[in-house]
Length: 493
Image (cartoon, rainbow, N blue to C red; front, side, top):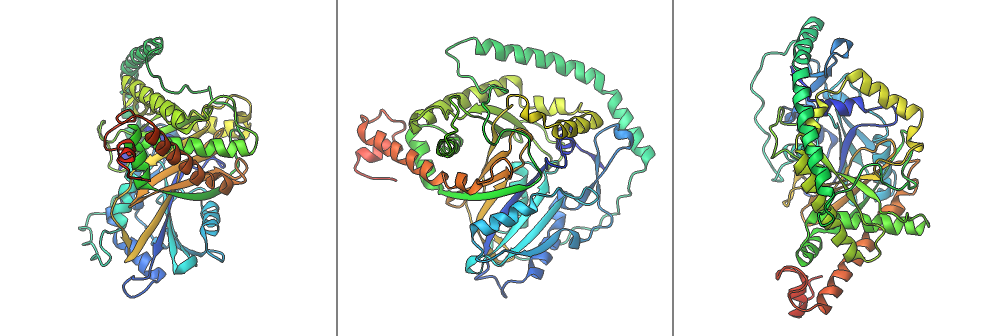
């Protein structure tokens, strides 16, 4: 038995009939050289053989009586893989749009909390004889980094990888009684008043430091919640989801990063900003103020972990500088605000969000989330933020599922009341794969938005090359970047 952390449990409390707190990834696979050929049974058997390597896949939740504390994980005593690995056919002609429609439909329903909180869908009938493997896991069990680790355990680095040895036999874990759950919950809660007082003091000090920093006009600062302009995807959402995909070459993204001296994450944010700006301009709806994104930050390496697969994340708010026309000026503005956001995040503390989440009251949070959705309060106030943008590093080497080669992996993160759009980006091999997930009522033309990624990428690439060619040597960032190569007569892009 293992209690969920407060942050993990918060993803449960925030879930409503229209706000689903699962994450998913659609892996497109090529079975051409799959040993013995493709079959659904092979995929199902492979998943079954690796379950012991995937803790969230064989545990289920047990709720504490009267919601006295956060739920606990226990080993599922009656696990049956038939409830979790399923197959479905993709409509003809099996292209990206048809696959995305299937993914949107699967993502439109919440996970069954009476079982381990995951599903895997084998989607057959894609073009060129390919198939897709869609994994859907509740956010209370994984974050972006741990989700990527799960993929590595589920997939293999060799086409003909041997079956992993079975897990050593272990005694069955008894389901805890209500008395045990209550006693454990009460003893944990009794220690919290002192912890809360100590945390409050640290929080006041940290916030005061941030306020002092922001008074200095020369200091870079992050974005501010509740300052986002309203857009078509900001408001109350419905349960139906839509999905769309895009892809850009990772090598050219890194070339832009080297030439401009920013980070890959800054380039990703700039690409998302250019995409959103182009889309909203096309509809005549670009706000005069910049859009505001919230970006999850992994703190797995900076804070102690209570469970290998639990959420170890914080968040930062950043302007996307969508009010700036020039793509390089926009990138520079994003670099400045993300630097300021990171400095403020460090001043507050990487574990501040997780520490406060420990005091979340299950009943209060759940009722508040449902009331907020039912009354459509997101339509009545300024958006907290416009959207979520997440950038997850993936493996730079090929992966295989039962011998089928992974061709692309499109991640899809959750959307929230008031912010019905999520853009999650995953690097794999030589590409950045963009997964768009949206409330269908918020962005009914999601593929139109996804189609703006490529021209936004070309705009930033061309601007980078042009600036490099017409700038004096050494002016435009590092000597290994586009600036030096262009002056040497080499066209990197």
